[in-house]
Length: 94
Image (tube, rainbow, N blue to C red):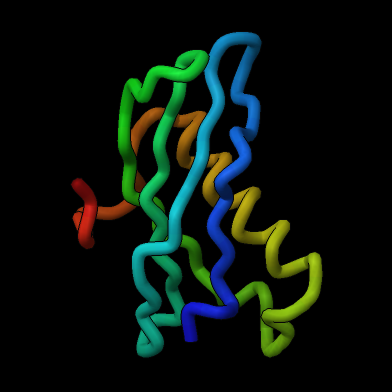
């Protein structure tokens, strides 16, 4: 199942100084949720880690197209910009 869930290894800008990356953590099939571990960077320095949950219901059955990846990217970005995790789940976060 993890083949559907890409890692976001290239830093995505938040503002002029900060960016984020994210790694897939787990998939909750019962609730159709994907969990990612996001890292916030200031330049090359890691400054925070957040768990992010993304509802996959909006994706429907198409998990292979660019729309699915954009759904994941947008979901992660919204949480990272807020500065707070959107779940109490801690997964395998280090």
